[in-house]
Image (cartoon, rainbow, N blue to C red; front, side, top):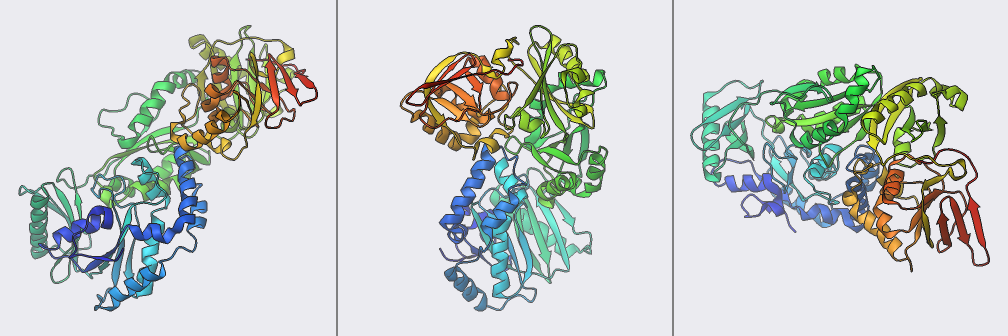
Amino acid sequence: MTLVGLDASAGADLVGVKFARLAEAAAEVPVPWACCAPTAWLARSLGDDRLGWLAQVMLELKATLGCGLLAATPRIDAILDGLVLLDEQRRELDDALQSRAASPAGYVVRSSPASDDSVRSLDAGAYATTAGASTPGEVAAAVVACWRGAFAPQALAARMRSGDWSPHPALAVMIQDAVQPTRRGVTLADGAGRRTTVLDPATTLAADAVAEAEAAATLIAARRGVPVEVEWLWEQSLQVVQIRTVDRVVPPRAQYRVAPLYGDALPHDFELGDCASVYEHYVAKRKWAFDHAAAVGIATGAARVLSFNGSGLADNPGALRRDLASTAHEHVVLDVAPTVRQVITKKDDAVAFLVDAFGRASRAHHVDGAIIRDFVAGYGVIARVLADGSTVVEFAETGLMDLNRGVVAAERLELVEDDAAAAGAPRDLAGALPTICSFTRRLNAVAPGVQTEWAVVAGEPHFIDFSVAAAPSRAGAAVAYVVSRGWACGPAVVLDDDMLRPLSIAPALSARETDPGAAAAVVDRLSERVRSSPRRPIVVARRPYAILASLIDDAEGFVFEAGSVLCHLAITLRELGCPAVVSDVPISNGDELELDDGRLIVLDGRRARSHPHERGGPQC
């Protein structure tokens, strides 16, 4: 596929929307010389190996709803290391540039994605631009920079919000003569005679430039039949450099608003863009419990909802930093769309990400939203009231997320009178457990079967979340590590840990809401492994990972090396009556297993090995 010029008739799938619109307008309005490296160049330069590695990264981001977006950056950088134009691409680019007299200002090299390039487009302005490249080598490097920019967090977030999980975007790169303007501006026109021009603040107002720009914008809008935003430069004459569609012809108005996530109802004009459904989910599920916590003075960590447009956010990064600095926690959890959820990052990195992703002039009109919650790092604790009124507590020093998603072995206590010290609780937790138990009973009176989730920092409990499980039960000490009662028999299928842990921390997976649809490809592979067993098997895994809920319909039961009886998978197993135990007995693929209410029997071909659980404790 060869370079494309402005005089060619090419669709956006080949040259991207930016270049296609300029080529369409070039016959009627002045446009600087330009050519375009078509969308196929990127895939060819990446090659099969890089595309395969990137496909795996995108699969994991899709499966985890983007919660590992920022953490994936070093891995993506390593995959892209050494990316260059192919020899034939470099030769063609060199020939095109050396066959003409370049602009004294060099070239502007900018990305031209095949997706919609409107002001309201999710990816408008998300991709890279390089100005001032002069030699063919510098232009080639700028093309590669545009390609690499398509995998920067803000560009990936834009693609993910629009549902694009491909290993590479449909991205062309346009090379355009740079102009050294004496005036520059943006003109908005609706094609019906109404138009508005916004000049660069450093530009001297000039009636001739504005008049020609408005005439050109009006012509383009009339021909396209939609309002347009025309970016232009003036160097002795008008030069149109970008064209976007807009919803209405109004000057941008800066917007930046902050409200408590679990406060009173938001004002009717508090827009949240793609984040609206995430906000509604949080409030519908959690507000009543957070109201109870506020009523008794229990800490919850700050939780904010933001409404902003590009100009408002770009003007207020300091305000956002001050808002976040009002609490001592180092990290926050960021949600920006249903497909980009629970990104855990440092506060300064969260500000930089939002400004890079949304604080662009191209999104000056479009209102976006974000939810930012303190990530409270400390002991993770889950508590639940049993049928006899006692409270079972599970805890892990590595934190609530690991405990809740079944990726760590839990320690457990049963408290009859909230006497944590007498029960042997660690010193860092003992002072917090009476408050945890008391509040859990308070919520349990409203929603029987509730499990409360906490982070304990320097002895202070922070209420984080809750889930509502089936009615609580009470069992004897001899079956302490029964996760779910029942009988099952079948061959063992032992699953490795490679993808179970990262998938299980995904925000798509939680108690009563497990929906592995986003992780379909990985789940399909797991299901195929389980279904390939000659009979319905007993699945063996290191921990009760949340993603294993997707295998319940194909399994007779489960065995875990260690884990939690209060984690999300345990709740689901009990509700569905699927037998499961925790056991550290070595098991191999194909071993014949039997589960019988706390007894694991392994048939190794010579004899049956019976492994009852002998350690005491509660079973929920």
